[in-house]
Image (tube, rainbow, N blue to C red; front, top):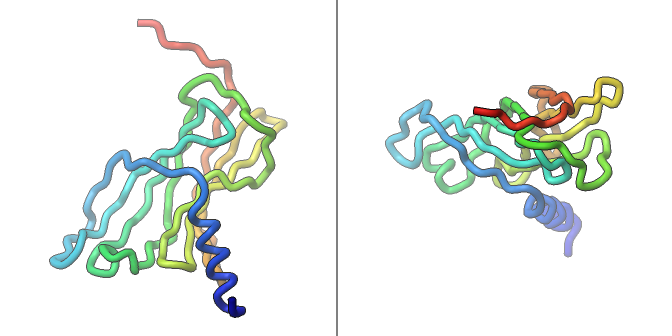
Length: 156
């Protein structure tokens, strides 16, 4: 395999693994005559190592012909909100800055990722979403925090 192909294959292999998000909803922002409209998509995923935590991502999805074919590059902006949805249990040891979600936002070189930190002093899980590229990433990011509290079911 030549020198240029090896990094490309390694990048594609990394992107093929990981947590899958499910679409919660979407709204069109720009009508496109050919291909799908530009949209804002809301997706949800569960933290793979922390039971009882679900994160919601809101991000732009490029439409048009390129977007419909998967060739467009989505914008770097994203918003995140993570919530406790049940008792919090750690399935495995956590690492600060550990990637918990990654999604391709261009054909090859750009990804959106969510990383997790544990703020031990405040007993809080902190999640950050950002976008990066093979060469240069973006400083745009969004952060959310979940205090680890006892879980009680609501009584009607």
